[in-house]
Each structure stands twice: as structure tokens, then as C-alpha cells.
Length: 214
Image 1 (cartoon, rainbow, N blue to C red):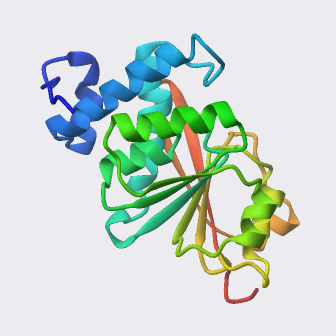
Image 2 (image 1 turned 180 degrees about the horizontal axis):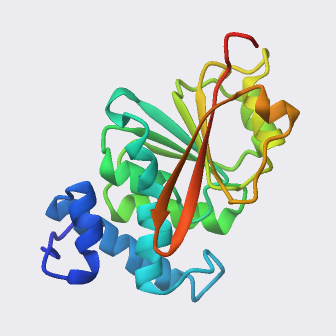
């Protein structure tokens, strides 16, 4: 992959400075952005197509969780309903050591994700077309952290913590709307909330895990 310096492209300054990106990582993000916008003309990957908004509401928003979790201590993550790769691919760019599992049932999106991983030279990126319940029932990968940007209802995501789940000891981070409130099932596993600013919006991260009382 050809590496080009984009540090003097001022539209990238916030991303570069906040996450101390190398030239190689900047180029990966730029290639990702360009390919996302290009392929979105062929089929619907994202409603966000403006380059500035892609950086803010996809890249920065995906990376925000790294302010609350030490990814250097995590080996593998799974992105539930990843769509066009958010938040997992930005996190993989930031933390290349991660093994990343991308859960997506749409075959066109899976093909896009595989193309992106190859283009950005990302190793240890595994795509899965299994639906959520099938994935929990038929796999047992060594996954430390599950992430989901509002892809499924949270009560469905709580299946992760059932006693029969091979992932019941993992942590789950959910990107929630400001209007989201936990139900009884979610409340039993919720242990932390965090807010942050991205663009002109306040965003929320909700953290779940199997608590001792469970």
C-alpha cells in the first residue's frame, strides 16, 4: 500500500491529533473514506456520505470508546451488525494487534468489508454471515469485547450473558441514543455509562458485563 502524508490536510487535524495517528494510519483512514463513499454509490452502506461527517460520525465516533477501555489489554473484539465496518475497522486501524470478528448478515456488505480489509492490509479480520443467535450458539472464539453501534435491540444483545453462552465473561459496549433507557434485563448487566462530544452531538456509550450478583 502506498503511504502518503496527510498531516497538512487540515480536515484531518482533529483525528490526527486526538489519536496521534501515524502517516500509515492516516492513509488507511483516507483510503477507507474514499472507498466507502465510492461504493455507497453502488449500494446503500451508510446514510453519511459527506467526508467531514464520515470522519466525525464514523471514524471519531468509533474511536471514542478507546478513551474508556484499554485496548492494549484486549486481544480480540467482535462487532455485532457491523454494516460498513463501524466501529471495528477504525479500532483495528488504531490497534493493529487486535483480532477482529465482523458480524454482518448482508452479503454485499460482507464483500465490501473483505475488500476493505485487503485494501488496508489488515490481518486477522474475520467476517461472519451468521445472525446473532446462531453466532452465540455455534462459535466459541476467544473474544474479550463485543461492540455494537445500535445494530440490535439491547434486550437481544443481552443473550451474550446467558449461562449457556461461551462469551458470558466478555464485555459489551453499546452506542446508545440519548433517548435510550435500560429495561429490567439490561439493567442487570449495566455497569457503566459514558458521554462524549462528536461533531455537534453528545453521544453515549453503555457498558455491560456479567456482574457478580448475576
